[in-house]
Length: 246
Ligand code: BTN
Image (spheres, rainbow, N blue to C red):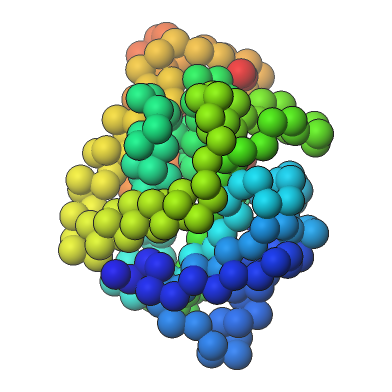
């Protein structure tokens, strides 16, 4: 086991990602260490957003990896790998979940998990990755202005034992990470694409020129989203350059 070889629990933290970065600086972490907390005082989301999570209700973890076999231009493979691990975990309890590009996990039109991946690059390799995961398990009510949060409890009506979920999630992530380091990155990309939210469906998106309709048909190796317009033209978008209209 790589992911989960060590699990460090903290009652509360500013942010598990921040704590992982502090421990990494003092060389206190081995690859695969998971930092887990009941509550974050300053949980960080993508694009400077905060991550809401009620005390003791959800999984708030950061995993420390040293994916030295991944060159920086392939760093999206790490994101795909972690997204698939979360999806594997959810499929233990629900039939369908999707990955909303680049790495939100959705059930129907609602977000159940978010990922904040922070890579430190040294020359031509990735020195460390901190993969922060917020996965909503038992929360019933969300207070922030996030548009569409949901939890496993809201979907299934059941309450879950967090420690069991943590062990299952860690095991599913470990299997996916081993797939990546075994060189099976083509399989990872193929599965990631097959699980994309709105794959091949006609929907509205917004780019710098306004709203348009199109179909997601793939993601390239750099993680850029490919959307085919109704006129058959395909455009590639990097993160932040296109917005889903939900
Ligand atoms: C998003 O905006 O979708 C990403 C959310 C990531 C939240 C997780 S919770 C554990 C880890 N620590 C943080 O501060 N953020 C990530």
